[in-house]
Every structure is written in C-alpha cells, then in structure tokens.
Picture 1 (cartoon, rainbow over the protein chains, first blue to last red):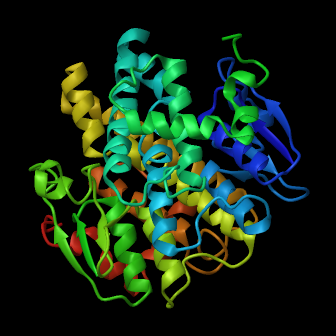
Picture 2: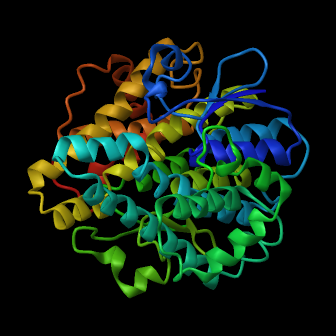
Length: 215
Length: 215
C-alpha cells in the first residue's frame, strides 16, 4: 500500500501501527505540513480536506480518515485483530478511541492552531493554551474512564490491543512533542508504556520517521 | 433503551435517527446543556466526559460516543442497515461521517465555545468566528467530495442511508441553528433534503424534541 502521511501526524501514526499489526508492507510519502504541502493542488486532488493520512490500497480512490482506515483494514485483512469480537467490548474500545480521535486531536491540528493565531492575533504561546486545554481535557477523561471501568486490562479494552490503544498512544506521544505534563494520568501512562513496547508501535513511532527531529 | 441527550446536540440527533431506523423504542432524558447539567455529579457518574449522548441498552454500562453507538446498533440489531456491505463503500461512508464527527462538530461544542470566551476574553460574536470557520471548513470538504466522488448517489454513499448521512444531517441542521450561509453547498443541500424527508429523521429532528425553541 502507499500512504501519504507525516512524521508528527497522530492520525498517520495510528494507521502505521495498524498496517504493522496487520503485516502489510507499505510505502509512506511524507508531506511537510509546516510548509503547507497538504494544501497544494497535487495533494488536494488526493484529499480535498488537505489532511493526512490518505492511503491507497491498489487501484481505486484513496482511503481517508484514520478510524475509517482502521475499520477497512480490519474488514479486509487478517493479522492481529484491531477490535474485540464482543459487541459491548467493541463499543467501549471505539468510544475510548473517539475520545481521542473526535474530541481531542481535531482541536490541536495545524489548521486550528493557524486559525487561532491569524484570526484572533494570538501569539504562539497564548494559542498553545487552547492546545494544552484539549490535551488535558482528553487525558482527564481517559484517566477517569480507564482507572474506573471494569473493561480496562493490560490494554485499554481487556488484554488485547485495539483502536483505543492506537488512539491513546497517538495522544501520549503528542504529550512529549508538545510538552504536556502527564503526572496526573498514571493509568494512561501505564497502558501507553505497554503499547510502546509493541514492535509494531515502536517501528511506527513519529520520532523514527523521516523528517522528525533527532530527539 | 434509555438515552441521555439534548434537543440541540448533533451527536444525540445521530443516535435518535439510528434508533428510529432500527425500530428500537427508546426514552430520552433531556439534559439542559446551557445550565450545565452535563457537568453535575449525577451525570458525570454516567459519562465522566460530561458529554451526551449516553445510551443504556438494558443492564450494563452506558454506551458513549455517537459513532461507536451507531456501530454497536448495527452489530447487535436488525432493521435498516447503517452501512453498506462492500468494504470500500463502508470506508467511504465512514470517512465522510468522520469529516463531520471528528473534524467539524467537536470544534463548536459548548465546552470549546466557553473556553474561547473565558480564556481569551472573547465576546460571543467574536467567538462565533471560530464556530463559523469550523462549519465552513467542514461544508467545503463535504461539497467538494460529494460533488466529485463517484460513490455519491441519492445519499452520501450510493442510494442507501448510512453513517455519512446521519452525520451530514446533524451538521446541516446546525447551519440553521447557528445561522451559517449554505448557498455554496448545493450537493450537501440536495442530499440533506433527501435525508430530512425520511420519517426516522423527521421524528428525531432537534426542533421536535423537548426543550427546543418553537422555531
């Protein structure tokens, strides 16, 4: 498969992990989001939203939106399952994933950060208050749920990796990139360390992709 | 089933439509989001995120996050299918749904609007620029995709209703509530009118729920 992504993109990170867990060979084209590659005509012809990831599986139109891609891979490929079988467990794994992929990550993507700075004339440091609030709101919800709900196990949902862990780790790695204090989220930390120890995750790590800073 | 929702919530609207399409009887408890009911201890015990919808299906913990609930209903109930069978068509329906549910709607929920006003001292009218930008960005993406991609039919994906339409209509109704100009989105309008004509959607309409204004 061929994917358009970026070292830093949380959504591309989730898809790289899923491709690795499914044992699918892929090539990633790394867009420079800071240079605005995602808004250039060549890429807008692939994804009019101007967002990564976009994934090509042979011929046919690109697949977009990370959670939709995870479901597509689950429905069309063998390899490590990305969701449990039991419907309530599946729903919980999806719900935890969506706390990140719907209610947290979209609040701090480049297009939002740029709008805040340009439209309201905010300096970067004040704009980052919005980003930090998004991280903290998401992390608090995850910590409360993961530390209280019976479904939590070695991973977010039971003892097998799922959509929830792929989203959790994409947020956790972002806390490092953006300097978010994580001391108040011990359950998130414990599970994140389990997830990071998986080879499929380690190989997909943002800091191991082309374009990433050395540390 | 028993659902905690709100007349105005786009996410609760999606779930009401799905329950109607599946022919499931339900009771909705309407929280007053402007009064902060969602942040009171009784509701935080149900959903620590302080967000609607939360759905109870018999005994067992509440189901949260609208897209996770749609998948749960699809996996556990008969009635009108909420997704096509073919994997690429499913992925496209999900991707279009997530343009709304991940990248648009979470940017204008009450908690974000409140943060912008309180943290940056923005008057309501200036805060609404952020909301309008979210709507316009989402509507432009949807219009471009729906008017160009081969998968579009009577509805967003082919000629059957799907996740994509439930999300589209939740955004479309919001354009009325928040006064967003929709002249530039004729394909979105055409499909929205198809969706609104469905009885399952008409009965779920925000303005037909308790707590809604008269017009």
